[in-house]
Image (tube, rainbow, N blue to C red; front, side):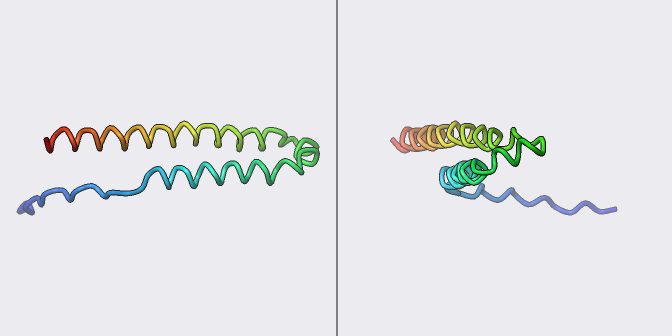
Length: 84
């Protein structure tokens, strides 16, 4: 069986990761706000932890936004150092 020749890998996509992670973070917070009025109903059905899961998702999303911004800044510093 003949092997097919390998092609070079394409370059990675440049995406706005801060916007993507930020959008998800906002959605977690909106879900928290939506679930707050239903706290007593959720507790009655054994799902009292759902709003707190959303709040934890929001907190982790904030950490993700911070990480993505720091990563972007490091990439830009690396590009500037390589071009000089």
